[in-house]
Length: 357
Image (tube, rainbow, N blue to C red):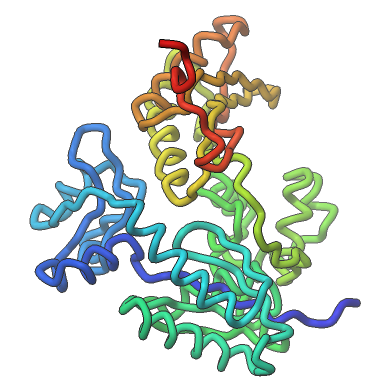
C-alpha cells in the first residue's frame, strides 16, 4: 500500500465577482453578478451578497435578475481573471511542483514533499492562503485530506476564507452523514435512483455490497463503492492541458429528438461558461445522445475557425441534431454538448490570415 498523500484543494472565493469588487471599491458589499445581460446570457459568477438571494453560476441571467432585482451586473473580463489566476499559480509553485489546475480558480496541490520542508499540511494551507490574501487582496478556501476526492469536498466546508482538514483516521466519520449528492457524479437523477433504494447518506451507500451496486449501476457502481469509503488513488497530475469540455443531462423521462432543443441550448451555455476558465481554444463541437435503449450516438463538426461565442457553439450543436438519423419514434434519455480539439491560443490560425490579397 502506498504512503498516505497530503493533498490540498484550494478554491478561490467567488473568484470573478471578488476580482470585480477588489478592482472597483463601489461594488464592495453589493450583490454582484458577473454576466452579460440578455435573454440567452448565463451567470459566470455571483458574489456572496448575491448568493443570499439564490443566485448561482450557470443559471440564466434573467432568472438571476428576478431573484435579485438590486444586483449589479458586470460583464466578465477573462483576461483580468486569467492574469490573477497566473499570480495565484505562482504562489502554489513556491510550495510544490505537483499542482493540478482544475480551472482558473481552483487547483489540487500534493504537498507530501513540501519545497520548504514543512511537514504539516494544515500549516502549508494556511501559509498559501495568507500569501494569496497579501499578494492579490483576495481570499481562498482550502480542504486538506489524504486524497483529491476528500480534499475537494473539504474545501467547501468553511467557505469563504476558511479551511477544513479530514485526517486519515476521521475519513469514515466525515463521510458517513454526508448526503449522497456530495459524491462526484451523483446528480439529481442519480440521487433520485439512490433514494428509491433507501440511500440518502454516504453511510447508507456504504452499507450496499459492491456486487449490488455494480448490478444496478454498472461501472459507476464500483466508483460509488470506492467513494463511499473515501478511496481515491488518483495522483495530482500537473500541467495536464485541457482536451475537451462538456456538459450533459439525464432526463427524468425519455424525450423525442424534437423536444431536445431547450436542453441543448442550456448545455451549450454551461459548456461555453466552462471554456472561459481555460486559456486553450476548443475547435470541435460535439453533440452526444443516449437512447432509451442505452445506445450512445455522437455527432461532431469542426468549423474553419473555432466557435468565438456562445451563440456559435449553440447554433452548431443544434444543427448537429439534424444529423441524427435514427427512427422518428426513438426516445432519448441523455443529451450532452461538448467542445474538443483544444489548442494553445498561439496555435490558432485565423482563416484568411495568410491568404493572398
